Image 1 (tube, one colour):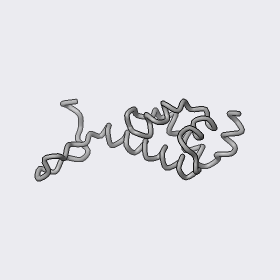
Image 2 (tube, rainbow, N blue to C red):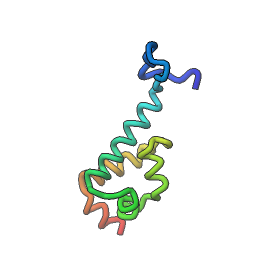
Image 3 (cartoon, one colour):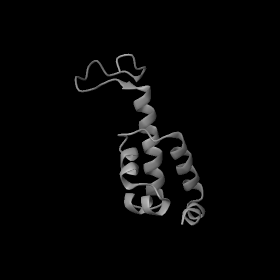
Image 4 (tube, rainbow, N blue to C red):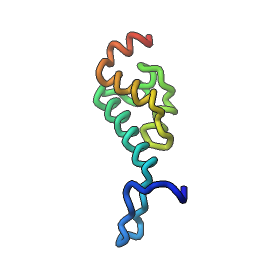
Length: 92
């Protein structure tokens, strides 16, 4: 990580602040999209995972930005956001 590109440098006046890498920023944005989609549907993590056939542990990791959600998962969540009932019916 020493050569990672910095997206947001730390505040030199704040000893608790830290640099944010491009990768971490992307992971956070993906996490936010997934979490906002789920909450907009009014579903708990468990309900969302069951309805759209995503392992709840995987969903939790994505939402908490512990793991970067892959491109296909981001695309899937965008489709869910637009057509939740159609997707739920298709995977049932």
